[in-house]
View (tube, helix red, strand yellow):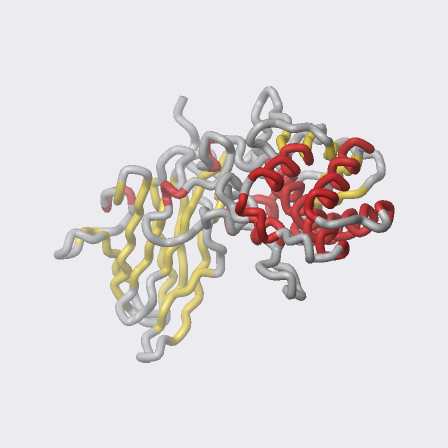
Length: 353
């Protein structure tokens, strides 16, 4: 069935002066734009103070799109798509994207830096604003005992288990809360419709898992998510793999408590992003496991950053990334950022009030 065409302003541009005195275009929209459309044609517009030839490259999953996909553009002598912009004018063009596939838009103006944006068309029903998402953190007794087992395996002794666990939980809450602070997502120990269970279980190759809904919940419509964190798997990994040598027996109890709390906070924040709908649907362009995929990078990092952002797969992430420190003398631990796609998505469905 043919869908009605919907023209949406994709990006607003403002003029600025380059070092050479040329009026340049800059985008006011973040990279990795998510555009709610019912057709795959979107509008690009801006204002110009001077006339210039604007070159536009629209690249989809199979390479550059023809100039016919960019309204009003014509091929120049080099075969690039060019739009002539008049001085003191408002210019616009529309782009024909691929259905539910991320496309790269590159804008080049003589004497100016290139502007590049990754654009993903999305079903508007998927990215509506949702109510606050709240998660209950369920520390099971067995899960806590397994946390203490990690301490016992990596320290010569443990003087006070209650104080140790209290510190683990403080660091966990601080890290997970900080990772989600930009969005209307809350975590705590009170009963909530979404739950995160901290378990002692061992599940081969899996630190944590979020139950997938029967129908992919691309926009976090349903608030009934269940996440399980397998401390037993983490303990086995630490015990068996030499890369965890960063956890030295001389570190001290406070350092180890922060190590474990920090790691669990990162893991839970990662899983809450999955529970929020990332990357459950085809238009989100994740890999088979629902993580960032490098196939649209083409030489410039947009989303996939080899484990340095929350939605990258953790399969090959070094321990110092998970614990946030590279040495025992680290004062301020590092955290993982959200990639721009995930952040833009979460700002659409769970914006801060």
